[in-house]
Length: 152
Image (cartoon, rainbow, N blue to C red):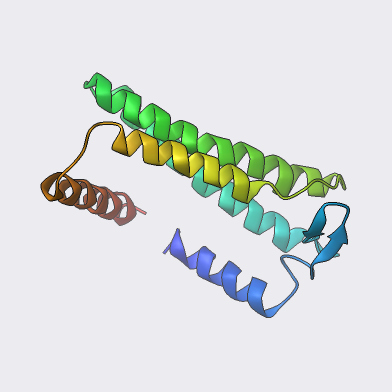
C-alpha cells in the first residue's frame, strides 16, 4: 500500500483538481505545466516520487555490493545509471527549478527514454535469447517484486 496507495491518490487528485499542477501554460518552447498557488501538495507528490526513486536506487546499489558475479554487477550498474539519469533530470526540471521560479523545458520524458534504453541494453546485452531465459527473467522480476513489496 505504501507504494501504490499514494500513487493512486496523486493520480485522482491530479485528474480531478488543480492542486498538483495547473492547466497548461504557453512557454517559449511550447506548453508546460505550472505549480499551483499553494505548492504544498505539489511538494508532497514530488517528494514522494523522489523517495520511490531513491528507494529503487538503494535496492540496486545493495544488489551491486552483495552479488559476486561480475556480469550481473555490470548489468545492474547499467540499470542503475538508467535510473539515475531521469531521476537527476526530473529532480532539477520538475522539482528544484519550478520552486525557484526558473522556467525550463520539461525534460523528464526525453531523459526517461534515454534511461530506459540504457536499462534495455543492460538486460539484452547478456545474450539472453530463447523463451526459457525470457521466462526466467520475468519470473525472477516478479519474485523480487513480491519479496520487496511484502516488507512494505
